[in-house]
Image 1 (cartoon, one colour):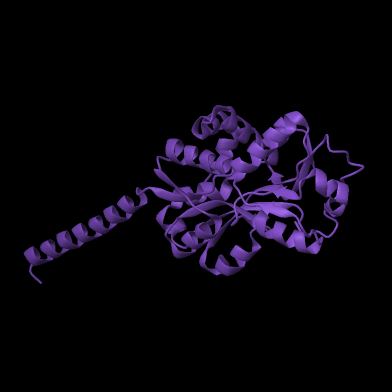
Image 2 (tube, rainbow, N blue to C red; image 1 turned 90 degrees about the horizontal axis):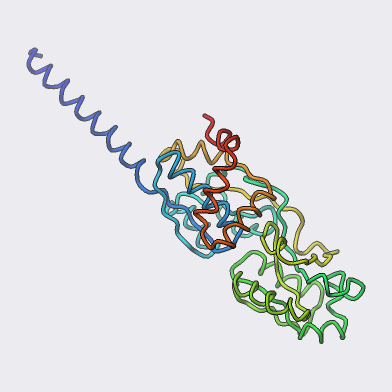
Length: 291
């Protein structure tokens, strides 16, 4: 091979390698797509992660609001890069079983979460202490044979449908609404001390605003303590390595999630609530961003 030909070959090879490297870097700068459900706990966790990604890692983020089933499917298919609100082992078990082999488990974000049915504290515990007590005729009348629910696709609603059967709550109507609809129903009942039972969960800012209690679930239909886990697409770690490392270290406590929720709900500005929390916890940020 002539020297000039060799030089030309080396230059062409170098250009090809540089182009490939540039293409990889460029793809890493693409917006990271995170799915989001309009529930306070998921908003608190997701917006806080978004704030860190955008302001500390210079990683653009696009939030995609979708129903839970579509979120799992989107991550499994690679249409979405990340979801940060999977409740396991019970609440989202059906979705997890279907899509687990097509997703990357990024670990536990926080523990101690739970779902359940709750009533305001002004409803006497002597009359309504457990789900089974809803079968009492006088209780059923005061509740207008109604259980206030949320979105039909939510894991809690699937579990609640099962609870209706397991506790033989014939004649009860499980209202399908939204988180906002459930909260509105509680806010209307509370001042007049009207009886209401609603599908709720922890963490949630409503526990900071209203005095309520979970009904006992002796059959365990609604499950116990849950772990909230993050899941990424199979391409996530390779395409967004710095974001992947951050999410693997991203941990919160139940109380911290509720504090972010409370601020986000009060201000109606989840970005501001996320910033407030991160700015107030530099030691936690340092843990999240460790390499």
